[in-house]
Structures are given as C-alpha cells and as structure tokens.
Picture 1 (cartoon, one colour):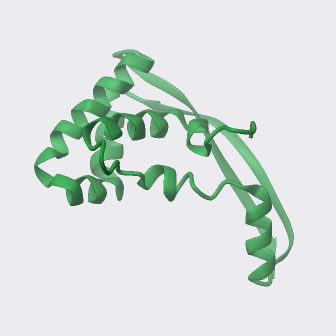
Picture 2 (cartoon, rainbow, N blue to C red):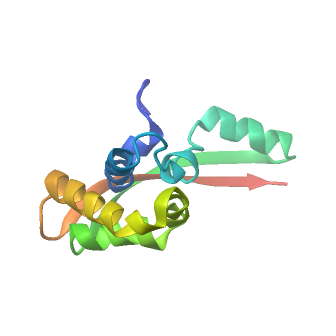
Amino acid sequence: MEAGRRAIEESEFADVVTVALAGVFPKDPPRFMARTPHGHHDVGRIREDLTAAGFAGMSVDAVDATSKAASPRQAAVAYCQGTPLRNEIEARDASRLEEATNRATDALAQRFGKGTIEGRLRAFVVTAER
C-alpha cells in the first residue's frame, strides 16, 4: 500500500460511501467501514498481533479484485442498510437512513456511472499456524 493512503481507498465503493455519509453527518460521520473491515490493514501490525496470540508460520497476501453491483442504488443499499454501517447511521438519526442511502447512491453514480458499476477492492488473506 502506498504511504499516506488510507486502506479504505483500496476498496472504492466503501470509500465513496464513507465520504458521502460524512456529508450527511459532518459532526460525527459513520466510520464503521474505515474502522472495522478496512481498519486492520497494516501487515506489520497483523504479524505482530498474530505472533502475540501464539501464531507462527504466517503469510499475509493482498488480494486485489473488482467489486460489482447492478446499479449505484444496489451498492448503496447493501452498504447503508445491509451492513453494521446501518447501526451507525441509525444511532445518529434513524429518520435519515433513506437520506443517507440516497446520498451514497448519488455519490456512487457520480463516481462510477448510473448503470452496472465496478470498483477496485482489496482484501488480505492471512494464513497462520498455532
């Protein structure tokens, strides 16, 4: 990963949705995606954590793929209403869930187009022995 880049930038849909939601809740943006699925990305730290937990013989491999959705709306609903991100949106103001989903839809459409969309995705596959 390039120095200075946030890990979430490597997964474009999640990044676009996170930025869009910061516009809906600027004082307390929902950061679930950046904090949890994309927050544990430092390979050195992953190795340290595994070693401290008693694991050895580990490998950490970055896997790059393409995320696809039939439409920006489908991706926005998946993120805003189908992940724990929904809990963070509703904790801020449950009445704004649809507004947040619409804002994410618009941001995804602006970045990727209005039809079928594709974005870069990165994950880490960790193998270790105990």
